[in-house]
Image (cartoon, rainbow, N blue to C red; front, side, top):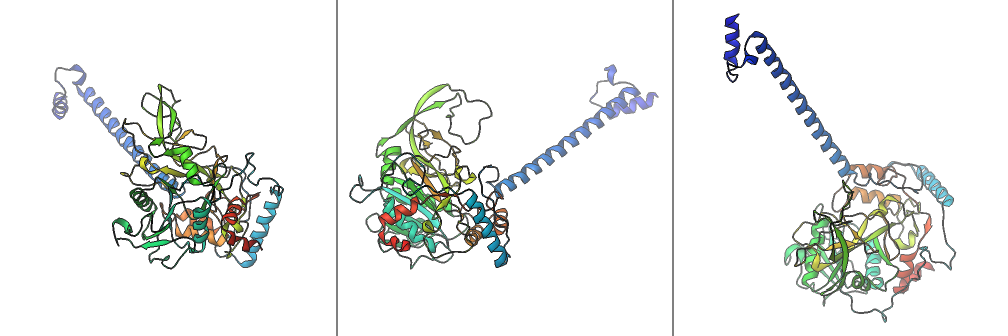
Length: 473
C-alpha cells in the first residue's frame, strides 16, 4: 500500500508531499479522475467551437450567394413557375397567368393625373432654362448591353444633362468600338493604351461627352468605378453618379442632375453641412445600416459635411413578356411594382468627388466610403430628406424628390441572360441563376409583372429627344 502511494506521488511531482489533500491512494485516484473529466470537457468545447465555426462559414457562403434573401417585402404579384426548358405552351400559360394576376391589382391613373402619384408638380428642363453648365458625370460598366445603351445614353445626356458618360466595356473583346450616339462626340480607349486602365489622352472634357474604355475581366465593377472617379476628378468634374445601364434617374423637383447636386451637395468650396448626433464612441446616429446592439445614446451634436446623396430604386415589372422586343425599355415596361418590393430598399449614389475616399477599394456599387475633412470629421451620406444614412439600403423608400427607375427584370428571357452573366461586383450566383430558370426573382418569388402605371422615364425621353415619338405612332 505504501509503495502504491509512493508511485502515485512520483507520477505527480507538482503536488507537494506535505499537502494532505494529495497524499494517499484515494487522493491520487480522485485527482486522476478529475483530470480525465477536465480533458473530456476540453475536447467537447473544442468540438462545439469547431462545429460553430463551420456553421458560420456555411451561413456566410449562403448569404453571400443570396444577399437579398434576408429582405422581406409584401405586395409581390404571383405568377406560375416555369423552367429553362419550358415549352412554348408552358411559357404562354405563364404569361396568361401573370397578366391575369396583374389585372386583379392594376392601378392606372386617369390621363390628367400624375402617374407617379406624387402631390407636387413635375418640372421639365429645357436647354434654355438650365441653371448652369453641368459638372456631373455618370460612371457605368456594361457587357452585352448594346441593345439598351443608346436609349440610356440619350436619356442621361439630354434629360438629366449629364456632362460626360464614362462607359467601361467589360466584354472580352471590345464590343462598343462601332457603337455611336449621333448627338454626342465620343472617344474610345483600350485598357493599358495610355495611362492606368485605359485612360486615354484624348478623353478630356473638351473632346467628347462619351468615353468608352475596354475593361475586361471578372468582378470589375468596383475597379472601373474607382478609375472613373479618378479620371473625372483629374479632368475637372465635380460630381459623379454611379449607375447601371438598366437604371434611369427620375427627378421630380429639380430641372437637371446638376441642380440636384448643387442643392444637396453644394458647389465648389461651398459644401452643404448637416447636423448630426454623436455618441461617446464617435458613431453618428443613422450612419450605420446595421441596427445598433444597444439604443443609441447621444453624447454631443456636431455638423458634418455632406459628401453623397442616396436615392432609392423604383423597380419596373416585366410586363409579363417572355422574349426581347426591339423597342426602348422605357416604352416596353411602363408598370412598376409596389413600393414595398424588397429591391426598392437599395440606393444609387450621387457623390461629390472631392469627398470620395480613393484610397480604398470600391466593393459596393451602391455605397462609397467618404473621407475626412481637415478637422478629422468624416463626411456623410444623406437621403433626399437630408437625414444621415449609412450603407446600401434606405428602407424608408423615399420618392418625393428623386427615384432610380430600375428596369431590373425586362422579359423572362432577358432576365435569365442577366443572371447567367452575373453581377459586376459579385459575379454569377448559382442561386439566382436557378431562380431565374424557374421564373423567380432574387427572393424566390415569381417575377413581378408590374401593376402601377408609370411612364415617367418615357415621357421625359420623348420630350428631350423627339425622334422617340416615332415609337408612339
